[in-house]
Image (spheres, helix red, strand yellow):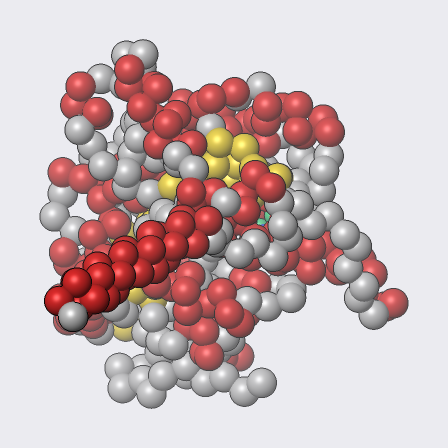
Length: 412
Ligand code: UD1
Ligand code: MN
């Protein structure tokens, strides 16, 4: 009787051990990430040593990074979106020239379009960056009349795939998206490093952008000046993983940037943006027509020196503090009409406010004052709480709605 009891016990233990070993074996064989496009390189990526990490370790062991940088954490991955522009070289050269270290800002170039000359240019950078290729180059059918807009569909599909690679496969927490026709400023990385903490802390922020739509010569002053913007600027911008998780399931088939500006996506969140742009575009020929480039984009100015943002206290940009300070400033300065600027009178104040009550009046004043006059999803370009700040005839001007403003109006 006793031996049977013992044997039964031993059998149960043996069986449990077998079940446990089998469980471990099955777990180790299951691919961690299911890829839509089934690319071999990426399908079992999580099970492999992270190539970015490997590159960085390699760089470190070869003394390319100094000791100070060795101990630094990654700030954000830089995702360059490329297609068929060999001029991506200009973009990459500016990024690599100003990047403080590979570890802080690993660069990943994602190429769509399968363009060979562009592929050769990117390959030339060898281990200075990571190069991935969009596996889905299939055609997209769009209604006949919209054939010329196909590019907007293809690029939206590419953005979705590339963002998913960096967030879901490479497990990055922060990503700066740089399109292949952007050139960046000497303090581009410094700016993002300094503002990352704001994006981390403040749930009313959803991006940091290097762009100012009104950033033209004579319209901007102050390399240290940063703002909050209700308008999503795009063009060299940082987002975090939680935003990607929120947007990915509903990512649009086309026009992703205007889709972002829609209240359903923006949800009253703001971006940080600089007075003087930290990125400019040189892409005259692209998916959209060159007209916008010739009339507007080519005049945008690039900050040409380094401003030490990380050594400054930027907590004034957090919502509570900023809103108080911003309203106090804007609504305390003298209110003038457009005629004031040409009247020859001088008010002894460095800043003035010009008021608009309706979108129509905003547009006409914006045109007169030489700033962008379009309004998207109810928000004028670069506006915060309806206020757009810029320089006109050497004066700081706030083009602003009345003090008791009730919010942006948007009718679909
Ligand atoms: C404009 C915007 C751009 C935005 C796009 C979204 C400006 C100055 N530009 O694009 O910020 O992302 O609308 O609708 O406001 N690309 C692909 N696959 C393609 C075609 C393009 O990945 O088939 C990539 C390009 O490499 C580039 C990006 O998409 O990085 C934008 O393409 P571009 O040709 O520069 O179009 P824009 O008119 O500037
Ligand atoms: Mn472009």
